[in-house]
Image 1 (cartoon, rainbow, N blue to C red):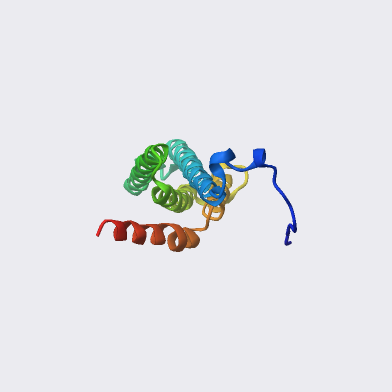
Image 2 (cartoon, helix red, strand yellow; image 1 turned 90 degrees about the horizontal axis):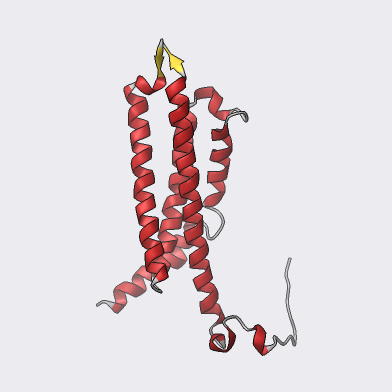
Length: 179
């Protein structure tokens, strides 16, 4: 679909940002994109954490060869890696939020979104693997979490668009200012 407006006037009191927003609507909207990306990173953290908790609970109760899955070294390794990635993404997202609240952090919000979205996909996939065949069954919440994780890297800017248009471009501009 395409929507166009010809000879359409926006009342002055409806301008984005009010009087201070005159001629700055694009930049104000870009700030909203950064907030949306940060929110997506936060959603990804929630999905990651839920995936980890589902995997941990399943591995604690599911047995194989007379032992709980949680007793196997590879299970512990997988859960430990998930936990470390969740914490790293959480701290980076917090840092991006702090910067954004100080009027900076456009690039960091995009980075946090891209990084956390990818991590959510990978962590829920790993959690699904720990469930074995049950991981794919709709009766288990992990299958839904995996689907939920997948969409995160698509909206609020795909990984590729963020990397090229926001992160890469922004970093080059930042380096240029500091040389």
